[in-house]
Length: 314
Image 1 (tube, helix red, strand yellow):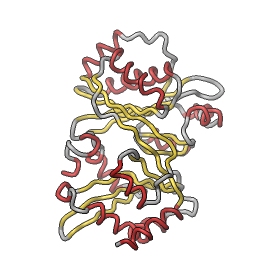
Image 2 (cartoon, one colour):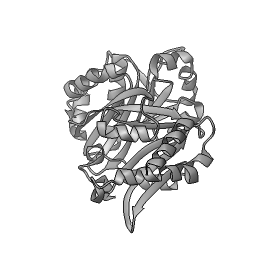
Image 3 (cartoon, one colour):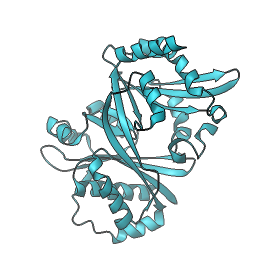
């Protein structure tokens, strides 16, 4: 797990050490390892979801020993074999191939091209990192004025009737996708049940007949300490603030010590609202690790053509 050293992936706020064994045991997850002799060059983690309607290239890691040593080329060489021997037999004709990456980074353009994802961007979202000690946060919460914020309640299965109407999806979601800790899903009864069983803390407003917002919260340990992710789906500033403060309260009721909050907003217009509210009202420290991510999505035919062409190069 030296691949998850603090100066690499996600600025050291890496979830993989905490979830590695969970992924190994999950029948919907495939971890592909690239080796050179007796050394591990890198790994790629693929995840089936939405009843096999989507295959997500969830993440990858490169052995620091091979930095600048052609590790990407070696992993690229294995792509046709990976699909042929491990993934394609599980895929349906309608299965979509997905990846969530920082598409603006020029060093990722080759990766996107090799997988047939270049030009297939579907939507973007922003993530921001804030940090503080729980005792300091509780002091800020005690003095925060929440009387003007809309009420939220923990999600219950009967709330689903207010989340599934097309009016909610069209007004709030991006491409009909729900993002939970970086992963895109269809909004469905089976997925919501899955999120609840996984221990997500889900909040929803009480608007009828269709809700106007919901959020997901959850925690994991990283090389730099505990991270609590808050994934906000809404387009209203007051609702956004309500989701933040209620998710922060939940985190502080469960944990002690330093917490880093990774706050994701689908509506990029809310980024400034999030930063101002977290810093000025909740007195959280804004860390210099903001990122904009893009969901890329394509069909398997495009992927097959790309990986076969990639194979020909080598």
